[in-house]
Length: 326
Image (cartoon, rainbow, N blue to C red):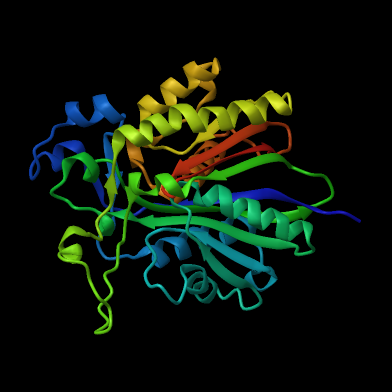
């Protein structure tokens, strides 16, 4: 008998510390009006003592508490993140230990703001391949990757984690997907450069001084990329499958991007859910945070009656869309 993956539970965790635009204006040349009018962001959550694994463990525990599932019945854990605690162990392995999912295998995915979409795609294929249950998480502590003296980037991002439980069912709920990437444009959004400290490495001039571990973004290139490539990705998939979506849950990068994509796609703006005003851009965590919030509010019911579009886009460059019945 064939089996397919279905999202059965959602959960999220946000750090307690909330930083408003007004607070940022106290130590950088910015204002609430400048930030909110350009991005739609008014506040964001940031860690004060936690790391990415802490956020993800707490989000995973929310999932277990909601579902009352025995963690020993979890087959796999996938975490999407670009801000892991370490290169190894993976955040997913730390989550596995933290929730005592002793029978699960675990690994991370690095696809920036598309990471949750990529991870959900992989997890659903694993269910089709025979596994029964998995946890898919997106988690970030982007506050540690930012140059807090750069108002063009620091004001945009926040920390958080969220995810879903994916379980085997008899009917398909992931109806179609289209994942894409373009490494030739990867320099438009970078983070976490690591200089080679080996005594055998031959550096080129002042390459070390020119490179930075801080997040860097070419805002114009990213905006054009979303208007062109991301809009085509969504449109082509929806048209190909004649998909009538109840809601669109897009990566929460900028309210102007959401507004313009809705207009370009000729889809009513009210179908595009958003919450970036409270959380900012949380990269791989943004879509599952938005999904969990919609479920908690009763907007999305997870009763197999609603059709939803999920779309992620960001560093790599990476982007992708999924058509689901939730």
